[in-house]
Length: 276
Image 1 (cartoon, rainbow, N blue to C red):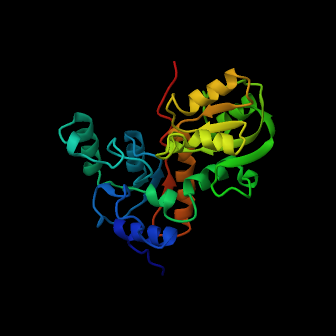
Image 2 (image 1 turned 135 degrees about the horizontal axis):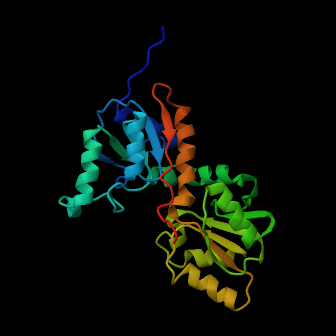
Image 3 (image 1 turned 60 degrees about the vertical axis):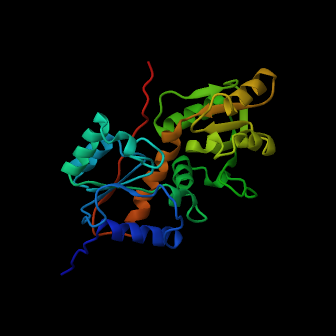
């Protein structure tokens, strides 16, 4: 008769980090337990881009008490809570988590930078079916040579693949596209180097950049000027959540290959915006 191993939250975290990158890699990291206990016995795991209230409610409905989220639970990059200890939204969300015995752990830095694989890109490329288009001489998963299409055709493709109804564009919708860059999440802000996205456009002779987050005075302004001057340049903005959520869907499958003693499922946080 087979028995089911009982895992604590900390044991699951340790196994993930060991298999992903040979153990913890960062002295300072946002990959922390933001609520709950490392000693909690895991009844089920939910992976998600962000532990929104709807995601938490769905995890509770499914009987899962351990949420692995890619982005913060408490509205700041490092999940700091000193500023919101008396805040009504924070208190209500935390009470619901505690009342239902849910532990939330963030998996961000190790997922992007803990090894030679950026698992967020892995998930997105699997969702898009673009792995074969990654240029072999690129050191990063940014630049792709795709079958010729148009800006409009590519926007329609992303709408289908990522379940979107609206995509922001800069440029001519009928412009032909072959060389495409993708900067997921906050990567399109430059990762601390504000000019980086523009340098990628120029260096890699890109027709189009797919962006997550944007500052309107950087990459959008650069591509808008290029478009207005007649350059063969365009941009699609998908947003932070839609460019990274597929990575957490991918992680659910990755985890199932390592854990069989409790259920593991992906819960889509969904795009946070609606458009009137």
